[in-house]
Length: 401
Ligand SMILES: NC(=O)c1ccc[n+]([C@@H]2O[C@H](COP(=O)([O-])OP(=O)(O)OC[C@H]3O[C@@H](n4cnc5c(N)ncnc54)[C@H](OP(=O)(O)O)[C@@H]3O)[C@@H](O)[C@H]2O)c1
Image (cartoon, rainbow, N blue to C red; front, side, top):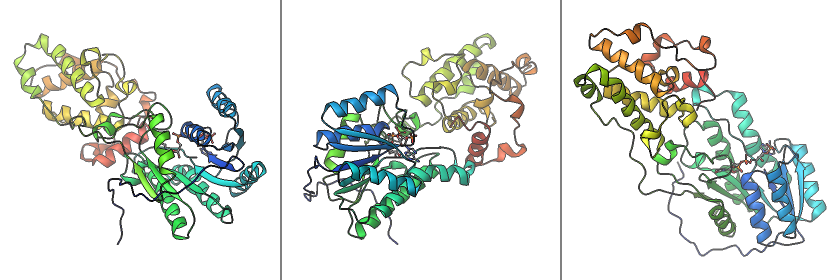
């Protein structure tokens, strides 16, 4: 059995001599998307003068119009063509547009979309939606260009298929197909290269790098770095390469740190709430990788600050250990602000110490989620595995992850 392994890139000396032909056309699918436009800029800087940029919508935003105008100002003819690359006929029409501009010599397949959610919450429809642009689109492009003399056929793949990524099983599958197809092209003597991009900063699908990824030691690629790396890689003979910015000193893993329960027990009752609030501000900052714990708002929902369901499960685990309390998996969803969480937790602590607790007898109405009536905890939630918990959370609050 052969399985892929990540090994550090070594300059192989084997370069493809390639200059872009100003008379030829070049196709970028997803070409008016974030990485598509960066790629277009790079191709034009390298000498390409006839570009076809495809996306389903051709009504461009002001920023996209500006980017196209800049390409034209640099001397390029740019056609923005509407085509769903998941449809063979549309791809056929797209290729006809390219050939009308000049013989098609290169393809960058950057069309793609995400629809994240834990595996148990995935459906055939969600999978198909993500497979359509990336995998089916690549397949149509491959099949319909077999007679073409292409200098490059580059697929923009993702780390999701190289090392995995939480909540991205469908996206990993689509990218995995793309990786495999490009290998298959190479095996057939055709040109093909798959680039498993790490997250680009500031633009595109992954601009909002979560603290979870940062904790895994994954850094960001700036657009300028990305363009330079693309320019370098497209001239390398390699079929498959991952671009993975590694942070050698990632933030510390999330493990419980303090005997919070003992600290609270030793404090006079009047001081416990403020102590717990300060502790929560610190822990939330640690989970979200924020610099200034004292600035973490007490009334702002944690999900508005960037928390996702995986982080919520982490925070609940830390709280359970540090307070020695058995806490519901959906705790952070039920009490989504620091203030509501702190008062509820203090009530539970008092109950577990055998003290009376007015706050728990009259709990504040803190269920601020959109559909409180739909929020029904399964009976077996306390025995659920992490995967089952996340599936439940995903189903109840699909938008959150
Ligand atoms: N950004 C990153 O950090 C990153 C990292 C790894 C890999 N990638 C890959 O790089 C590619 C570009 O990503 P991005 O960040 O630039 O995303 P983006 O800005 O959302 O661009 C993706 C483009 O794909 C187009 N598209 C989606 N479905 C399509 C379909 N069925 N037919 C034709 N076009 C379609 C979208 O346009 P319409 O909606 O108008 O069709 C959009 O312009 C994606 O394949 C992504 O998986 C990106």
